[in-house]
Image (cartoon, rainbow, N blue to C red; front, side, top):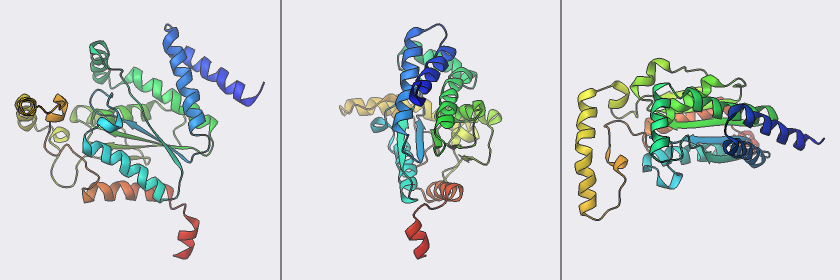
Length: 264
């Protein structure tokens, strides 16, 4: 039996352990494992973005500031001289049933869904010796990222960047030397992180009016885009955000541009 056949068999066994009672999910999970395994076999880094909110938003539809973080991390890794593969991990598939399931998961600090991704990252870490994994999470995505980190068994080469983790998860968060946790954008306090209840309520109560204003202008804007909690944005262009992320990546991995380093 070849190594690839062994890896395929292990992926199928792992999928059977994760999704014991759902044949369809077992097949999708093993296909996902093998797909990512092939995508990263010649890469130095796997960058995984865990979207905020319900965890369903494609990169092109993200809020501008959230997308800027993902692109900024990817560009920094490239600037340091490393190859990378960027992907998104959607913890829900959309739809009312999935969203209600995610509400329950959030209340339990994503215990079940975090195990699923953590098992996949352990699988990739064991079969790619040179691969380093960086998870990027914003808001609820940051909480999910931290929950995954706590479930990992082979975590030595898994790092996480967490921005704006909501206050209810703060007591459950575990920060290690491989974690960058930003609770402020450097310009103003994050009302959601600081649990500024009056500001949060005001934001949510006025969001429908902002949404209706867009509708009257015939602008197709998602309702969630109208919930703009003050300070709960971490744009890559904000000096403190960019500095901390770049410093974290540089100090953790160094510069792989040998010619550039030698010239200096």
